[in-house]
Image (spheres, rainbow, N blue to C red):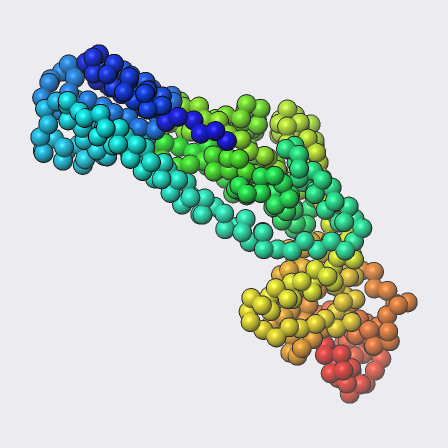
Length: 456
């Protein structure tokens, strides 16, 4: 990408000074804008971006105190605290220089200037300003990218034909720039798959930013998504970079997209259509180049029909829609996923690796998993600590009885059938031992032998 020349704004009430500086700086390949009045400076920086500003300290109101320049400097810093401002005057003194630095000036030039010295100072402050902007951006990125790093560490498990087909589709679409909408139940791994799509794409060297739209209130939507300038509203004590700007040249993932308030959907639509926005409190239009990936467990078309979601926004979001199957619809992935989570949690907690008993595997594949992969992860983590030996058994899983189905009696061993029936009966009688024994028609000693044998 060709780097654009640095843009410099100069303010001085002497047209000869402006002409001389413009010729000098343009000869060094800078883009130069000049104005004669302080209020013109403020109007320009609210609308355009500059790499550096050079301002005279004295204008028509007086010619020696520097007060007009101090006031202008303070107003510039209110609007953009990171913008480098070099002050200039023909009536130099140590006191004036110190006061200017206190108000945020980065350097001081005395008239008449030396050309080489002035150019060196401008180049230095532009470089330092870019570093400050980059540091501010990185600090805000680091605060937002932890969840994305966690997603990147997860492994894609796809043994079932259904998921293999989904992964193949994602890998093909990754090389396009089309907007992708992931649909499916909560906990099916939509966030992780969005991250995987980004990793496979040509934008993988840039930022992947995940945003939970359900956690952003209507009043903070614009500030969070587009940023705000210092002083834009109460408590906005510093300029904030929005999520779209942070994701520039990368991918932004909007999870729970159905939660965007109707009043804010038009603002999101504009960014998608025109690739531009303004920070809250600023009239300066910024351009952005991002790929949008979104996800929802809601029926967006039904929301369109009830006027809770914009039809034109839906068209923008779902250039391609990918449905992620529930865990109960990809049973071949349940045990591989469970084994993956065992390995992950054993490494996390520095524990010896454990395995699932055959009866536990049968229970896992027979469970309906209303919470999908997220629920499987939580149950495996809990079972790891409840297990008393090197194997995880049915009782360690603590699966709710009302969501267990599909136990395959024809393929199960006699031991697995006994363990399953005893577990089911205990649940039915609310863990009351004698009632369970009576219902099974066995002796108390026979019951406890089986409890010990099957580690129930």
